[in-house]
Length: 143
Image 1: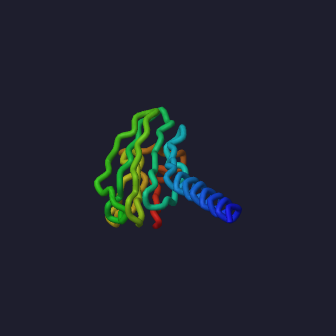
Image 2: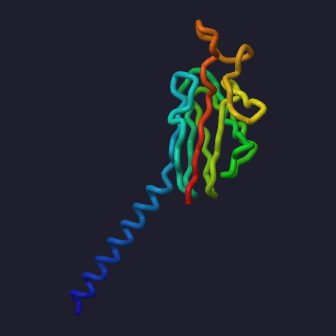
Image 3: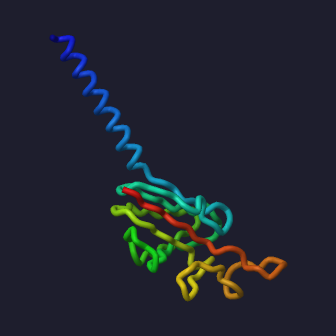
């Protein structure tokens, strides 16, 4: 009988350890980097409810993290955070949905709330007259 109790206790301990590891992994923050250029990488991340996303600015220029509230269904409406070089910013997501975001220095929203390159009043024009791609991304939050 004591062998059965020992095995049962060991099985319970293993389950508790596995559950602890799973919840620790779930709570880990995802990072969105601004490398030494004007873009967010990765463009899209998926997290679970309860996880944090941290934006890290590794560029020598400042950037913004601005929520595109026309399509934001994951909360944190009205985000407009200034990221100085070397700084970071975190949000913890508490409900499922999508959190589209952009840098207001390097993109703007058109009449349909779609990010576009800022054009002649911002951004860098290439030799062909293009102003590049808008600096934006999306966080998808799942249950």
